Image (tube, rainbow, N blue to C red; front, top):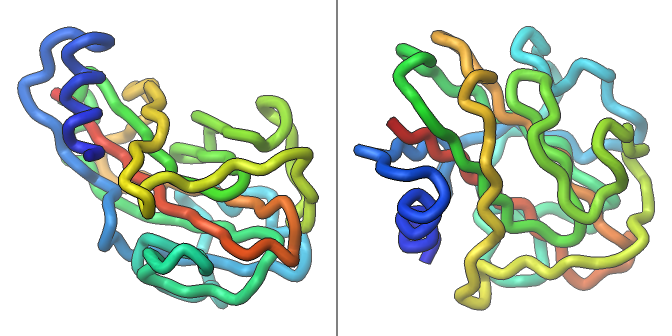
Length: 186
């Protein structure tokens, strides 16, 4: 489902793309934190050492039956996936997809690139922020998450990091989902 949406997106919005590389996908290993206090303000940068964070496979959450890493009920999760790019100038486009419940903020190498149902751009959310509304994840039901255009100029040759914070709208919520994807097109 996601691959079909990606092909349609590239044909209609970006023009011809010779090939896509999935640098963050299901099965990717992430460092993650279920906080009980505000994380350090530079947690989303490449030079941050995720000492004391847990490690898990993408597909974080509970309640939908599709989670690779099942977590306990939580206000939020902070996640980091480090990946390598040989030649950052070799990519003309990038696309982010996030399947989430209930809100998220995503960063590429420390720069905010997208948010959904999580305040205003640039706003720092408290780790225990209660969101104004809810958003249901869609992949578990066969849906396709929103595709978000990302500036490929934010990539660097060498080490890169996709960092995502996902927030629930209630600590007593019956479900929680965090499944980010990042595709690079050349």
